[in-house]
Image 1: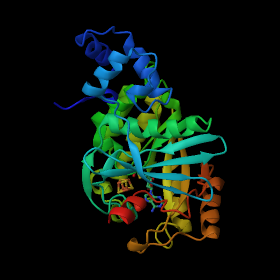
Image 2 (image 1 turned 45 degrees about the horizontal axis):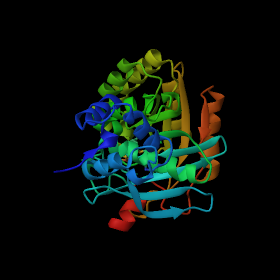
Image 3 (image 1 turned 90 degrees about the vertical axis):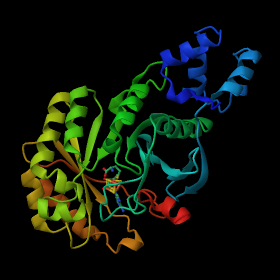
Image 4 (image 1 turned 60 degrees about the vertical axis):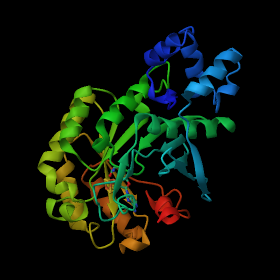
Length: 345
Ligand code: SAH
Ligand code: SF4
């Protein structure tokens, strides 16, 4: 008989599981505190549970925690883990040491269907969705690593491999576990979901009215160029995507971040910056310019620093909020999907 995965259970679900075994339902709170807050890695470590219960649990339940099979550490202290999944697949999880607190980058699928031309995650194609429990297990892996050295996870981004809105149900279930006080108990104000722009799903997310931050990978200021870089644009072009983002901003009161990777001689010219400014004028928006992490197999180049600065300067002049993302993990396989591809490919 296969074991039940505790990370896949709601708090209520865990209470009834315990009751069915003739145990006290309040044991659920103790177990969840160990798993989500006290860094326990096994049933044995949950020392305030009776020994007999720990034995029963070890026979009937799996903690759902996941472990890294590889780790790379960058000189700027970015840590990248290849996390092993139960079926032999693997995804990447990254710890990002920002000045304002430690963040993490979490994967939502193995591979990706979207086929963006600049992205390493999509290269192997789509393999499968992650479950809500597998997404949470990555957050806990990071949280526990940080706990071991007295650090705290302040925020995280769903920006690893995969398109989160192509795995919508698992994401909604996962967000519920993030907000649940008995489980992760973290405000969605500290969580950002990054999407390539599945407009109908952005509207569904807006309908939930939760304070989750939304980031949209825009990468091009017109349909012709965006069609080439991100095939998803052919299904949901800018005239559909941007109103969905406006609706998201309106319903949640959160400013939408537009991510824009600068690719040499492709989307980094002054005319592109002007078009981008025109698109985002009068919108509750923020632009995050991302230095491209070259993926050798893809044959694209990052824009030189002066071009990045000129691009940002044009947006600023047009009163668009803009930041240039710090380049973390540049000396390791930092682009999404690169570590996995290099090790498994
Ligand atoms: N699928 C979602 C989230 C994962 S991709 C999305 O597309 O938003 C996360 C971010 O990494 C996106 O903004 C994407 O544009 C960016 N990205 C992908 N490949 C990259 C690369 N080689 N260098 C820098 N950023 C990259
Ligand atoms: Fe998928 Fe995002 Fe990569 Fe596009 S950028 S292929 S949507 S992971």
